[in-house]
Image 1: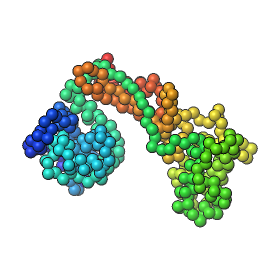
Image 2 (image 1 turned 120 degrees about the vertical axis):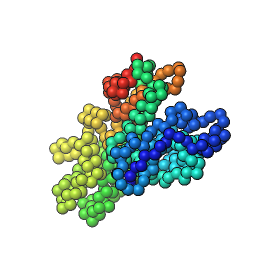
Image 3 (image 1 turned 90 degrees about the horizontal axis):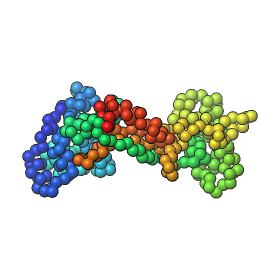
Image 4 (image 1 turned 180 degrees about the vertical axis):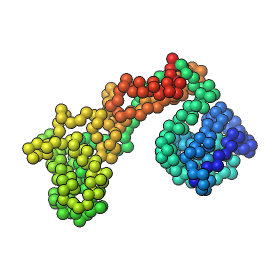
Length: 342
């Protein structure tokens, strides 16, 4: 698609008239447009588009819609519908009242362009630059940094559930690609063992350990079969098989021809331990009495009695990273933006 930059500095007069009549006491989106004007410009996104092709939707408007969508927690479809139907959004976007909007998939394509061009911080940096331009953010002001947990979008597994789920995923993946080969390798007992997630709470400690080591032996046998007993080497590159291999290195070890489950003093620290086969970067975090699996986000914001508190930096780290460890990186980022606090 090609980009033909639009002039977004003015709002159609009919949109202004209807918006003012509809919101005589003001509105968040009207105030945002009145105070900040056009936050994004199409020219900022020129490098993301081909010089030829069908005209693209204005990326500056899509960027603003993305912010509105996040602020209200809307799906892509709901955000596209808001562009079509809401007067306050049309005012903020500088659209005529009869503008039909766009298909929801356009928002997906816009985010994909940001990812492909490694510009995930572009919207934040552009907004921050605009806030500095209008004087809402200044260097050497008072700021504070706080952190909070970010939950991974996966089930919270214990170690038994993690190895069981990794094994089940590997078996299901192989069953879709090489069902006949898998049928020759899998004992009948596996069908029952991996058909239903184990109820670890109903087992004694000895029974749980025995089950973990049985799963470990099964996984070792499966990996051995894939590496040594198949003529399809591409199976080794299946995501599920690579995840299984990595988890087995962390959770088990080989001792005198027997697969053993690693105990607490013999497994990797939480900073590198995989807790879910479906999110290899999610880690176990703890802050005071709270524990979670996922990440930690550090937010730095201005502190002033004269205006709004505005975020000046966002850093996302693995959950075990402490606030003290994150601070040098945050300070360096603020220095790069010439926004170090007082």
